[in-house]
Image 1 (spheres, rainbow, N blue to C red):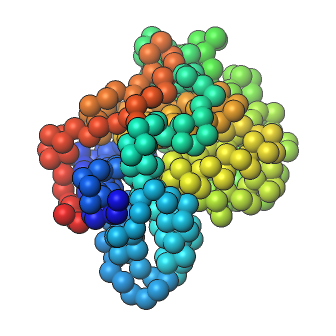
Image 2: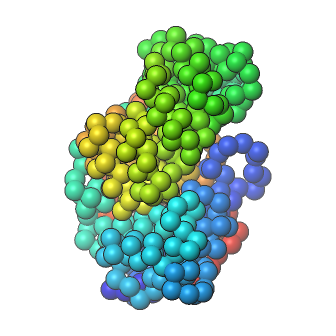
Length: 374
């Protein structure tokens, strides 16, 4: 069995809103073998940039597009192919969007591997510890405390026992920050777990002040209060904060995660399979479990990544929460025939071969804006 085609497709909603939500477009990578078997993957990054990395022709031995690197290879050799992609993209890779593009390919290769052996990916990764995981509804803040309170009531009414609010308009003023969190707690009630995602808006001292203020509302964690690269700031904050500090969604690959893990800079490490692939996410899982910290997924794209995240997080020994994006974008809910969404606050790990996700080809055709590799 050899890789015959690598197809890259970009899908986008008709009208993209100016908000921090990566569920408005999708970049799919489809790896097709000479026996007709196909694996699917997805990257959470700028779709056109990911597509360029897949499509790029040979420049020289360490500056080469992913399709050129992988055609003719055995798709089952996932570890070797990851290292080959890493080596041959090192002049424009090693972190960020190149690793995200590799992650989409890697996801597709693991999907292929699972289909080839007739096994779910979590079994190929070593076995699941969880059949289902408590899910939190992941959604953006409202414009103010009152609207945020209404959003909280909506999702606890839908059965969620944990809700996370994130990003804008957090960070505009201390008064508004407190109003938003106060409204969030009022909306979800006293028994629901409340998580706050600041969206990278403060310096370390301001973040510490907010952590103390937000602790009165019993938040489960404060997520991404600092810019992603501020490792010293995160280590300083984590040692002083009265609430757990979470981050990691912006990191691509083991090289990005390693300094955070080495410094014990976080309480919760959030890993996005669509930016790391299964191969490097396995490294991160082992290291984080080794230092006694906690793991959670990051996922705000389509059901392809939701399925991948479930397979990976189920293999994490101490998994305690699953990020369940509840954005109303059709990309989140209609790309696959299978629906991966929480019921009564819990989300079930798929057990079908590979990802257990089947693309809705009519939906793909409807929203397709660009394609290569046919």
